[in-house]
Amino acid sequence: MEESKRLVCSSSTFLISLFIILPLVYCAFFQIDRWKENLTNWDGNSSTGKKINEDVQEQEPLNSLLRRLVRGDQRIQLEDNGFAYLSELHSDIYIASKEVRFDTNASKIYINTSQALETYKVRPYALKGDETGMNLVAPIEIQVGNITPPACDYIHDVSAIVFSSGGFVGNVFHEINDVIIPLFITTRHFRSDVKFMITDFQPWFINKYEKIFTRLSRHGVINAAEIANGTVHCFPGAVVGLKYHGYLALNMSDIPGGYSMFDFRDFLMKSYKFKIKDVSQLIKLNEKPKLLLLSRMKTRTLVNQDEVVKMMEELGFQVVIVTPDMMSYFDEFAHMVNSFSVMVGVHGAGLTNELFLPNEAVMIQVVPLALDWPGNAYYGAPAKRMGLQYLEYKIELEESTLYDLYPSDHPVIADPESIKLQGYQAFRAIYLDKQNVKINVARFRKTLIEAIRLLGR
Ligand SMILES: *[C@@H]1O[C@H](CO)[C@@H](O)[C@H](O)[C@H]1NC(C)=O
Ligand SMILES: *[C@@H]1O[C@H](CO)[C@@H](O)[C@H](O)[C@H]1NC(C)=O
Ligand SMILES: *[C@@H]1O[C@H](CO)[C@@H](O)[C@H](O)[C@H]1NC(C)=O
Ligand SMILES: *[C@@H]1O[C@H](CO)[C@@H](O)[C@H](O)[C@H]1NC(C)=O
Ligand SMILES: *[C@@H]1O[C@H](CO)[C@@H](O)[C@H](O)[C@H]1NC(C)=O
Image (cartoon, rainbow, N blue to C red; front, side):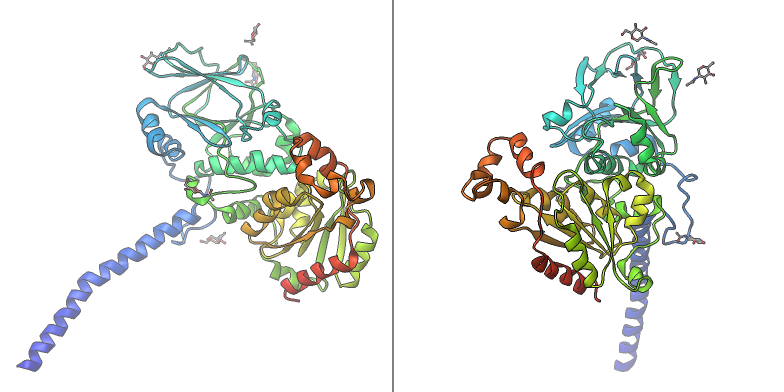
C-alpha cells in the first residue's frame, strides 16, 4: 500500500510536472525565439528560419514606430497631440505622428494640432552646444498648433526624417559621429520605410555614404532646398533632428530597435559587403600580418615615418601606407581597411576608419602631447567598445616637435592645461595644427610586439 501510494504520488508528480513544467519550457523557448527574432529580424534570417526580407514585410504602424523614439511624458504628449519635443544633451528632436507640411522655399515646417500655436527654431544637427559647428547649420522653423498650413505640392506616404548635412561634414570623424551613427540610431527601426529630407544638402556627401543611405531608406533623399514643381512636401509623420549617444557611440538601451555598436558594425559589413568579420580569418589568409599606416600630410605628421616603417617590416608586418587622398574613394577604402589586422595612426579623423576593421583587429593610436583626452574619447574608448584590441602609444616630450620649438619651461611644454584655458582655438593652433611627431622607434617597437602578441602570432 505504502509502495503504491508512493508510486501514485510520484506518477502524479510526474504528470503535474508534465503539465506545469512543459508549458513553462515551451513558453521560455518561445520567448527566446521572439527575443532572438527581435535581435535579428532587421537583417538576414530570424532564428525561426523564416527569411525576413527588408522590402516585403508586415510593417509596424507608423505611429508605433514614432512612439518608440520617446518615453514618459513626451510619449504621452505624442499620443495626445501628435507632437513631442525632446531636448537632449546634444540634440533637439521633434517628432510628429500626424501630417507634417514642409515648405522648402521658406524652410518652414507646419504641423496642425488643436493646441495654441508654438514656434520652434531648429538646427537639425547633433552638436547642440557647439556654437562653431551649429553656426554651419541652417535653421528651420517649426510651427505647431492651430494653423492653416499651405497646400501640398507633393504628397509622400512615408515619414520624413529631417536632418542637416552641414555642420562639420567634410571631416570623416564628424560625418560618421554627427550624422551617420545618429541617423542609424534614429531610423534603423523604421526598416528603410522613411524618406530623408536633408537640409544644407551636399551632393558629394550623399554620394560618399550612398551605401548607407540606401540601406537606411528605400525611398531616397530629398534636397530640402530643392524647388521643383512646387515647394510644399507633405508627410504622414516626421522626425526632425537626430538622436546622439556620444563619440562614435550607440547606447543599446536607448535605441528603439535595441541595436548596439555590434549591430551597427554588422550593418556596415552588410552595406559594404565586407568579407572579413574576425581578424582570425585574416590570419589564415595572410602569411604576414597586414598593417595599415595612416600617413597624415599636413598636421600631426610622422616625421620619421621611413624609420618607423622599416622597424615594422623587420618585425614581420606587411606595411601599407595610406595617404588622405586615397581615402576619397570611400567605398573602396572602407573595403580595403577591412582586410587589415592592424591599423596605426597619429591622433586624427582618419582613425574613424577603425569602424571598418575586423573584430579583434589591433588599433594603435599614437597620442601626441596634450591630446590624451580627445585621443581616448574619440577613438580609444570607441575602439574597445566596438570589439577591437586597442593600444595607445603616448609620446614623450622629446618625441613632439613642439619640444624643438619651445624651451622646456615654456607653458606649451610645461603646462598644456594653461593653454587649454585660453580656449579651444588657442589650444588647437598649437597642439593639433603645429605639432608633429618624431617617434622613438625603440620604444614604439614594444607596442608593435604587443600587437603581434594580441594577434596570437
Ligand atoms: C537565410 O536562409 C536561407 C534559407 O532559408 C539561406 O539560403 C540563406 O543563406 C540565409 N541567409 C543568411 C544571411 O543566413
Ligand atoms: C520662394 O520665396 C520667395 C520669397 O520668400 C518668393 O518670392 C518665391 O516666389 C518663392 N518661390 C516659390 C517657388 O514658391
Ligand atoms: C487643422 O486641424 C483641425 C483639427 O485639429 C481640423 O479641423 C482643420 O480642418 C485642420 N486645418 C487644416 C487647414 O487642415
Ligand atoms: C515637374 O514637372 C515636369 C512637367 O510636368 C515633370 O516632367 C517633372 O518630372 C516634374 N518634376 C518633379 C520633381 O516632379
Ligand atoms: C543609456 O541609456 C539609458 C536609458 O536612457 C541611460 O539610463 C544610460 O545612462 C545610458 N548609458 C550611457 C552609457 O550613456
